[in-house]
Image (cartoon, rainbow, N blue to C red; front, side):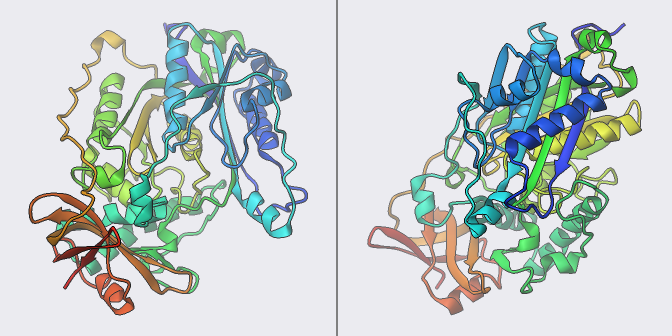
Length: 499
């Protein structure tokens, strides 16, 4: 007999608003209400389930800052929850929140919970272009509980050197992974292309994907006017697409509540376990090793240990996939082959299915629920990632009830981390490249080289290359991990000259 406090995911819904007219497009609250109602209908419980909601969690919606978004959503659903939650920034937050809600349910502190999120950046872009101001609700009485911590992902120093956005930082990790694997640039390009080709093929079969198009490896990796270089080695087709209009919702209940509300058991997907963590070095330039993420490894290991399964026993996998490096790093840390026959995504990933602000993993979880229902008894794993491989989350689920907790192995001990240190303020002499990238403008011309490395005396440095087009083109044409050069400071700004 299943314990009445067992957390179950009973209803899911997704929404993709294509080609939105800025005068008529649904705003975030409208989309949240729609997916919430559809999740309740998916559960077969309808309005009675919405009325019974005692916990509402909203994933932070980029560009929408009402006083209390969860309250606005609850009022639109005619629910009166005792608990209203809004997450902080982070692609890992939906799964972290789902794990938190599952534990509230398991502890008897919640019975019916809704977790929802939306993204309307494409509508906002079109509104800006048409000079239309969004008329989105800004109220909601009271204040929701903030779940997580809002903190910038880059330090002021990193931003001064160009490490400002994910499109700047993930290529740096990519170069370190390529160097660790000992691959030449062309071999690496083909390998990444093959990886992302498989993701695009999954997106082509996903009705909610923003770009449901299967692309070849060559199409993904070859720069063209439609697929320009963003930052070496990434073309546009390797970058998460944030300009989307998408929403997703998950309705969770205790097994007892699901029974009392008449949710058919074939709709139940049991939460088996989850975990979250963050790297000891928050800022990317302070990572002891750009080709490792110890906390990512630990987060997945703790999730699997809590669920009582090994990675080999998982049937469906969705790895957070904002950029190829995020997938490759997860494979290395978890112990997966990049061509694992199970596949590494159920949605198609952020570059193709869409990277809706902070909310991608709610879409991956909703899709995972469908996969699990289609294969009763199978098991799924979903992972999340915030900022720059900085924060991590994971959860495991199945249509089968989990094994009794007493039989589950203890989580593995935490790994020993090295003390993170920021790059030295000023370094002179010689240095060696650990990781790097070259940024490009919209016309495909290289504009800036960014280098992270070690000086001959062992200090970490962060630098730009000289602003010379011929040098930058050369810097992106040959392998520079392990390359030595001269370090100097110009007006307090560190420069690495690979001469």
